[in-house]
Length: 458
Ligand SMILES: NC(=O)c1ccc[n+]([C@@H]2O[C@H](COP(=O)([O-])OP(=O)(O)OC[C@H]3O[C@@H](n4cnc5c(N)ncnc54)[C@H](O)[C@@H]3O)[C@@H](O)[C@H]2O)c1
Image (cartoon, rainbow, N blue to C red; front, side):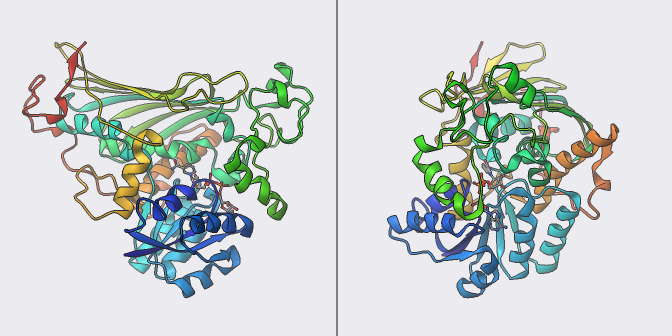
């Protein structure tokens, strides 16, 4: 049984913690919790104790001592993005393997340091790209690999964050480029990784535009929220504001943040119209890939709806995945219940043939079912990784590099070549036979393509 330590015991760490004290308690043992805010580490230890697990806590200054005393096989890194590299490098140098949250890191220099540390130590780094593992996105990978739509030439990818989820990136550390790299790195790393993985290639060149059009003081004023405070708690506009975060009404947020803010001053509910924000909320990128594909990518963070649409145009037809994760946000900013009324539609339109809609695989839990499948892969027994779901530091670097290049392009106004960014970056493992180039076109044949079972002509 492998042993695990977690550094960064905020929101995201609970996915790993709950797995190790819950469904994966037989697969791995949690031996240490470490955080800058010792109160938050203790909160996590109390949650573990509630399930009968005694886990020691360590201040961030005692990270090395935690490793020496507890000898974890793997360190799980769930600190803010700008600190990932510090802990990844240190954990590798202290002889541990690493599972890190995305993005791998935020800038080219830190990417190079992580890659060098992995080479130097011979240890492994896995990046928690949970989006890859969702069953519907795996279905898209299967369709692309089958050759049903031929060689992909163009891709359009639009991602919508609503005024509940999208606004959250403007409340706390993500809101500055120096902490998160902006949404081109922090958020879009998921989407750029999906494209690299789906297309089975590496990106070559990026041109980007980006602006902050919505989370601005002028917009707050324009919608009549003129008496705004620094944060939602105690704000005079609280009752009227559709963007408010009601920490007091949420036991998890209260335990995690409000109860511990006296220790480090971390305010979870800062105003989304603050003048301190310097990240974009509206972004466009054009990405050229080594296999010739060109992708147009759009990300907006102030939508009434949460979801995405990705379209692949190939030499034999077109594939579209449409997702609506939430149809709308309530006027008081709360989520519609049930919170995740997710719908997906996967359509294939062959040239000279009728369009059909795929039967959807079952998915449960957050992030389109990706979290649960990923945890099984990370903690559960080893099994064949047929679709190449597990992403390492090279894949993490190639995804982060698209966002880093986009940020460079925003400044320079020019196209940025990715290989120039990180010296010696290796090509990640790409799942073999993308686009099934050698296969012969067979319309709608579940014998040949089992994932066509249940598909319906529309
Ligand atoms: N894959 C996903 O879907 C997903 C979802 C949410 C967050 N994340 C990622 O998880 C990471 C954490 O995000 P979060 O929402 O949990 O943030 P958070 O702010 O809730 O938690 C971060 C924790 O790190 C601690 N910390 C800060 N500086 C530290 C330091 N120097 N040493 C040790 N601890 C330190 C903070 O006190 C806090 O407890 C981020 O990298 C984020 O991108 C991924």
